[in-house]
Length: 165
Image (cartoon, rainbow, N blue to C red; front, top):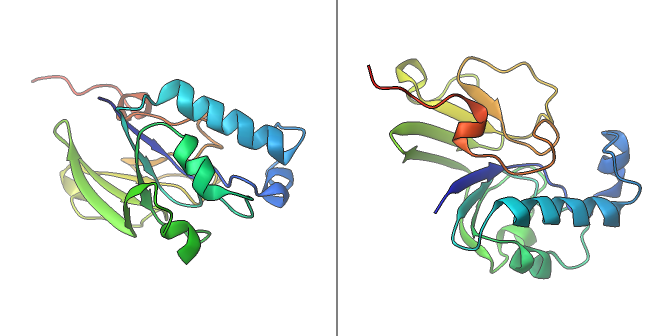
């Protein structure tokens, strides 16, 4: 089982597609490409943390979420209204999460944080919201689809693996 991270998919959000100049001819093409990238990376047994802004204006977000692989957690963003938060496909819905993954402390939030718990002790802040347009702090990573090739990522995709001393 692998653990994946993504954010800012904005399924169904045509005006954002145009605003960010995402390389898709239509919103339907964007949605299909994002779903295909998700399912080609994430297996049904994997865990995936979506760090906010899942779908905006999508016709059937419940069916979309059900069609995406993995055990799905939502760390809600500013474009995740109660209807999105209440979708039955989420294993959990929270605003901020702290977890340990393979010995690495992570602080997950939709928003890039200025400071976070464990920052001075090696904890990483994974976030979305900025669509790759914000210079990160040390140990801070935007896992949104825009700066990450429109696909989910693993911790190993963000930084080299830790080596024993």
